[in-house]
Structure formats: structure tokens, C-alpha cells
Amino acid sequence: MQQNVDLQPLNTFALPARARWFCAVESLATLQQALQFAQAQALPVLVLGGGSNVLLREDFPGLVLHMQLRGVQRLADDGDTVRVQAACGENWHDFVSTCLTRGWHGLENLALIPGRVGAAPIQNIGAYGVEAGERIESVQVFNRETASVESIAAADCGFGYRDSVFKRQYRDSRIILQVVFRLQRSAAVNLSYSALAQALAGQQPVTPQAVFDAVCRIRRSRLPDPAVLGNAGSFFKNPVIPAALHRDLQQRYGDVPGHAVEGAEPLIKLPAAWLIERAGWKGRRLGQAGVYEKQALVLVNHGGARAQDVVDLAQAIMADVQQQFGIALEPEVQWVPPRQGADARVG
Ligand SMILES: Cc1cc2nc3c(=O)[nH]c(=O)nc-3n(C[C@H](O)[C@H](O)[C@H](O)COP(=O)(O)OP(=O)(O)OC[C@H]3O[C@@H](n4cnc5c(N)ncnc54)[C@H](O)[C@@H]3O)c2cc1C
Image 1 (cartoon, rainbow, N blue to C red):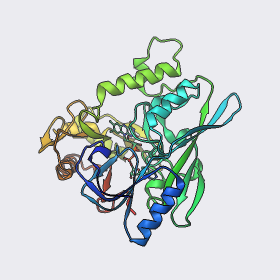
Image 2: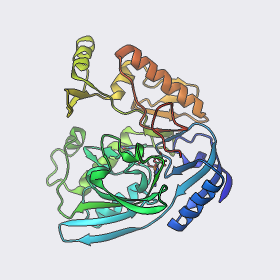
Image 3: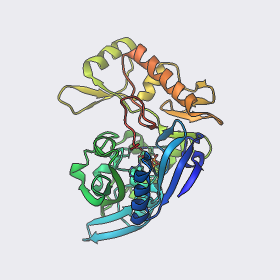
């Protein structure tokens, strides 16, 4: 257990913040001891993986659990399907690479997403036509209410667009220890995302390795490297709006992108980046925080930004988009402490 630990190197936004208490969790036993300590001292607990989806708004007054459990294990392999278990502290991209190297396919579209395996189910990470939830069989968690280890089947994880039960009813009570994936030996690839299909046009056959390489190439060209320019990836979710509002926007602006999503009523998901750009924010700065010049969905730390700079920028963007388009943007990044009425995992 360490005290007064600097969290700036542990969040990809590189925002300054300190943890009153900090524990590097390398085993279940350490986790249990740390939680007992927090309980005895009535400390709030923050679970941290790679820190690539958090906005640390201030020093954390409680205990930060830095999840570092390691290990990748093949549980079963019938020649078609491979069941693989990965510990929460494994680096996500390294895990995707390992799977590819061993001929376990299905995660290649999710290459180069920063962070750790344990956070993948939290917001059901997704990119280039695939969501992690489609490949997850079960999630092993530590239940803080019963102080026991449980397995939650994927069907009970409530996976949705950047969403799961771990962001909602389980957000303060379950800590993810292991994730079990169901991968395929066959080399079938998912090219449903048009930019990916275009990047691979003319290649035959398209292998999982080719998909992995193309995804890495596209991501490197479009997204800032957090090691160079602090950021937490897409700052906002893409909003899902009634089709009638989308039609109304098309009448006003002509070229509004979007695609239909399933729902009880006709709904359209449209790119938040388009709204932010049309509201005039692309490339703009407020203090040391700014909107990335190549991708309006990404807020960046130009160096020396404080959390309040990012909060002010995010709120200014949200207010402008609301005023101009009547659409409420919802942050994808987890604010710590949470925004009023929003998701965050502090318990
Ligand atoms: C450049 C860049 C690109 C990105 N691209 C994508 C993308 O394409 N698609 C996408 O979906 N996301 C993307 N992200 C967001 C981010 O990488 C993912 O959300 C990732 O899964 C976060 O992992 P992490 O380990 O860094 O989580 P952290 O930021 O450490 O934590 C995120 C949340 O999960 C909780 N948490 C973490 N680990 C555990 C655990 N073991 N048990 C319980 N709770 C836990 C934390 O409390 C926090 O609320 C991107 C981020 C960056 C910086």
C-alpha cells in the first residue's frame, strides 16, 4: 500500500492527480486485503486499468486499485473454437497480437485499442465493425457485496453500444478479474466497416493478419498517440436520435451522416464528430485543452492542461451542440468523480 501516489503517468490524458492510497493489485489475495483496508478506513475505491478511458478531475481521496493480474490461458480448443482466458491486467493490444500469432481469430478488428483486458467488457470496447462483447463468453469478477468470485455469462453482461452492466448496476460492486473469450481457428474476417473494406480492397484472400495490419495503419493515421499528445480516445458517444430529428437536420444542413439502428421506434446513430465539427470546434483550444485537428471526437491535452480545462472544453462543446442541433452529447470517457447523474466507477 503506497500513499500520495502520482496518477499523471497512469492516465493517458496525462492530467495531474494524486491518489491518497494506492495498491498495485497482482493477485486476488492482494485485492481482498486492499478492499478490507479500504472498508476499515471507510475509503472510496477507484479501480484503474490503463487509465485510457478516465478523466481524473481531482486528487482521489481514497484507495486506487491498479489492476495488474497477468496471464493468458487456453481453456479449450476443439479445432474450430478456442476458449481463451485473459487476466484483467494484460495489455489489450498485446493480448490481441498474441491471439493472432497463435491462430485464434476474431479480435483483430480491435487491435491497438489502449488499455487492459479487464476494462474491455466495461464499455464493451468496439472498433471497425466488431465489439468485444461479441467475442466474450464470460467475465470473472470479484463481488464486493459477497466477497466472492463469480462468473457472469456474456448473456447477462448487458452488452450494448459502449455499455454493459459493469457501467450500471454492477459499477461499484464488481471488479473484473478475468475475461473468457470464444475465438475461432477459421480465418473468416469481418469487413463490415466500410473504411476497413476500402483499405483492403483488391487483396485476396484477406487474412486476419491483413485486417490487424490495416486497422493498426488506419488508427495510427487518424488518432493521436497518447504518449505524444494526451487523450482518452473518443471523448463522446455517437448519439442515437429519432429518425424524425435526423430528417429535420438533413433539411437544415443537407449532408447529415448517420445510419439506422434497431429500436422500438426508427432511430439513427450519427457521428458526434460531425456535430462537433459543424459546431465549429474542430482544432479549437480552450486553455491547454483542445479538440484534435484530425478527429473532432478526440479531446487532447496540448501539454500542461488541468482537468478543469478539459471539463470546460467538454461542457462548452456539449452546450453548443445542444443549442445548435438539439442533441445532448454524452461523454464516453468516465469522469472521476462522476458528473451529476452520469456513469463512473467510484465506490
Ligand atoms: C487513443 C485512444 C483510442 C481509443 N480507441 C478506442 C476504440 O476504438 N474503442 C473503444 O471502445 N475504446 C477506445 N478507447 C478507450 C479505451 O482505450 C478503452 O475504453 C479501454 O478499454 C480502457 O481500458 P483501461 O484499462 O485504460 O481502462 P481505465 O481507463 O483504467 O478504466 C476505464 C473504466 O473501467 C474501470 N475499470 C478498469 N479496469 C477494471 C476492472 N478490472 N474491474 C472493474 N472496473 C475496471 C475503471 O474504474 C473506469 O471506470 C481509446 C482510448 C484512447 C486513448
